[in-house]
Image 1 (tube, helix red, strand yellow):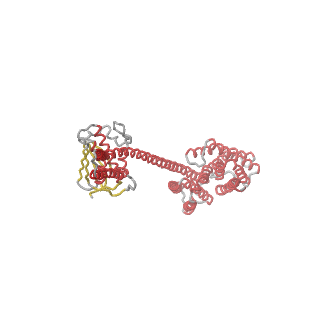
Image 2 (tube, helix red, strand yellow):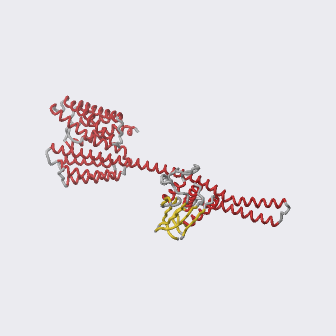
Image 3 (cartoon, one colour):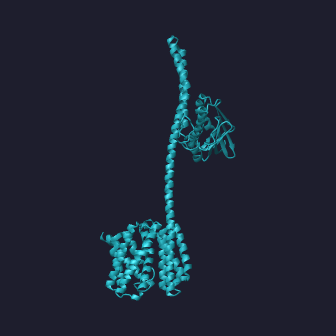
Amino acid sequence: MLLSKYLPTLSVAILYFLLGKMSFLLLSGIDIVNIGLFPSEGVALAFALYFGKKILPGIFLGQFFLAYTTDVSFISSAEIGLINTMEALIAIYLAHRLKISYKMRTFRDLLWLFFFIVFILQPFSAVLSNSILVIHHEIPQETLSLSIFFWWFGNVMGQILIAPFILLLFDRFHQLDEIEYFFYIVIFAIYLYILEMILLVQNPLLLMSLSIAIIIIVIANKGLVYGVTLSVIAAMVASFSVYMGEGAFSFSSDIDNAINYNLYVLSHIFIVWVFGILFEERKEQERILRERIAYEVHKNKEQQLFMLQQNRLAQMGELISMIAHQWRQPLNNLSLINQLLVTKYHKGKLNEETLNYFKENSKKQIELMSHTIDDFRNFFQNTNDKKQKISLNKIVKDTMHISTSIFESNNIAVECRCKEEYTIFGYANSFSQVILNIFNNAKDILIENHIQNKKISIELYNEGDSVMLSIEDNAGGIKPDIINKIFDPYFSTKKSKNGTGLGLYMSKMIVEEQMQGRLEVTNSKDGAKFIITMQGGVL
């Protein structure tokens, strides 16, 4: 329990010390000030931003022992340790005030981090620490300016490369496939080692292009964590080639080699983060877009379900009206039969023949009413409505059958022209309701416009691989300014205001989205003509 509590503090102290020693060994011997990547500062900054103030003692210890074991006096080492600890405290304060996320997901977080590293943290550390070294005669006063620059440059390099890398690992390591992740590290390290130590590529720009091209591909496919990790590997292998005196950073003067080395590392840092953040933001936008699309699709489905329910309620009203029309005649017949029975009884003429007549005819009328209910129930039930091969002729015939009483009571003549038996692939019940919606709209407009010879013409025919169903009325047609709106939801032309404006909208949805057909409307010579096109053929 105690170990886990102080593990981050111990870890930062050990890492700071070991990475500092490695940096001095690879790049410039045992000097306390060197021009080149100083990863210890990156570790300190990352741990400070992630763990907060509790990590400060570890940073002090790491810097103190690193300086003290590099021939710096005890007092100077302690003072430099305190300066680096104050630097970390400033970083924590700035990150909190500027609301910089340690997750490094946006350009804003990255730019603010780079800004206060370059212009606040390292100027503070470089000036004070080198002043301490001059005061205590650790370095000559005449080299102060150069030492400040070397200190500032090396620490900036270490922080802008290592700090974001560690913060990304803290945030996303649990999401990585560890085996794949380390496989990429090993393969890329071997690839760079071959280029620098075996093939001895001498041109830094060629080496940079060969390295960065691979990293960009990896970022695009695997993400920012992989890309930043490989940029760190590139810096480490380059540092090793400097130490070994081989590769692109060992064929010129010391100044040229230092410039080439640092340009190489800086280019990796800049390009990897620019491309990495761009890819990250693109993926984030894609994720947001997918979520928004999924939400809108879900919302649209709910809206369509609501509209479907409204349309079914409207159809239930039509259903009740149709049943009332269908039952009116048998109920009238039952009333007459019943009256006949009563009259016979009062006149004393009730006999066996009259009772048999009453029994047989009343039974016929009741059976007729029962069959009517069965017809409507079978027509409107939507259970087990599966997409299958269905007879278009039968659907039209059944729909006409349940609409007969409505048409007859309103003196509407219905004509059906069909040369062949046609089949389509779709939902029988849903398609029946499409035809019924069109029938009801035609009936309503015929009545509303007070047409004398009301007529609905139905025609089935085929064109190539398509089967066509046209339903045409003689109600005068649809006004040009609204003909493109009649399939819109909640758009209704019914003057009685009892229309929901959903019948034709839902019909179009059923035909075009569920059955991959086409529903169109045009004005003919005498009225409106609805044309349904479906894939099908002759039976």
